[in-house]
Image (cartoon, rainbow, N blue to C red; front, side, top):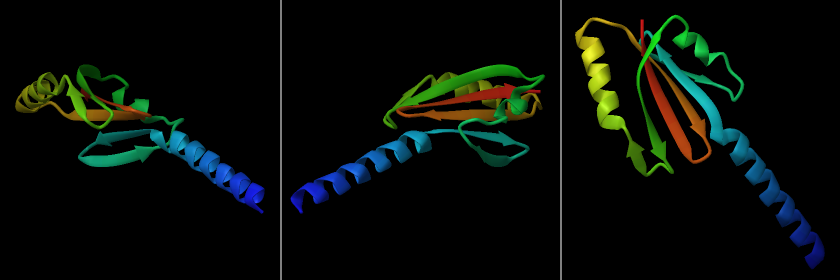
Amino acid sequence: MKKNKGFVLGMVVVALAFGLILGSCATASSIGGTADAHGLFSKAKVVAESAEEIASYSVILGIVDSGYEEYAAAVKEAEAAGKQVTTVTKFLFFLTKTTAYVQ
């Protein structure tokens, strides 16, 4: 009986880990003021077609931002110039990377 409980618990742990891995890899984009979620294998890059990358920043482990000040300044500058800003955000396990594009 104890052996079965250990096996079932092990299978649950493996299933949860697999789900977390797949759920941790996703992509989101914004265009025209909307936030759009995409799967791991997506066409989110269409947001960036014929657009110029202006800035990006990363969030590591959900704790530390890297490059956000420069990102925010570039986005504000582009909006002040009347340009449309779109973003693509990639979630990869412990790293989230957001990239802004202008058209």
